[in-house]
Length: 372
Image 1 (cartoon, rainbow, N blue to C red):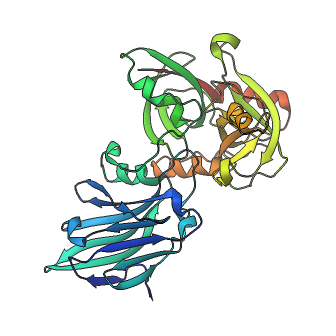
Image 2: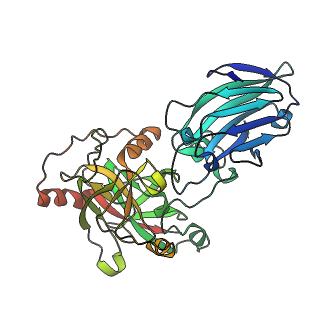
Image 3: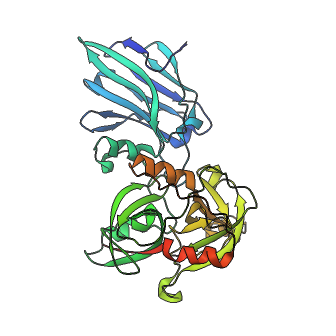
């Protein structure tokens, strides 16, 4: 077996089969697709064992195609890196492909093309932190054409029910955080299935700029008053750290004013070891999704995304209380950069007076009303 390097070009036969073996511990979470320049997605065939994929003939790819590995289960996050090592066979020739150096949820492993009637493959290892949808949007390809994905990124998401609602039908509400002038971050599942988004206060219209179902984040833009919250994306959160959660849960029952609860960071990873999320204990409710998780000085450290489904836990003979999940603020910072939005660089606050902190949150954490 030969070890390849990024950028290396291999000359292979056009009619030879291609076999890909994803050998890492998360091999069963990774799918393999080929994508043409026109945005036509073609899933490779699954083999009999975990992480085995194959194509009967490289000629099936046409003149040009990229081969991608990606996380197929969007609900639990994760990165393709944990699927490595990856080996690729073209006919009888076997190669070890290089792992990406960054944490990526979709990786372009090879570019296959014809030159002078000869099939060649360029070895690659670059990709997208935000997964296969980010790849599709970057190329202006149809997201709905992506095969193999398991949808459903957020707890309580009602995407299929929402999409069947008549235009103008109120679908629900959630929370959002002002992170730059006119820029609000919320959960992807908060706006899923909607086409009309407004601030709860003042009813100003919001426009969707970007969405990342893999990490359950979305960016909205509109005329939003208030001061953006400082993003604490340099100083890491720590286990046991005291935090506040701010949002608008159960507005129909509890009123439309901001709710703030307290707790601590109870776990450094999310569901099944997802490193993009963390656990916290501050009580939240339906409608808190997309709200702010803050340190004691009011600096943003995460976005509320979901709670543990306690009923499912009980069905397994276990018990749980107040286990909630947040997306780490580093993912918010990266998504802003990927969308061409420059964070304002608001200095981190050192004022831990609780009354002052909450007062600042009143203008920076907003409610979002979603309609079909």
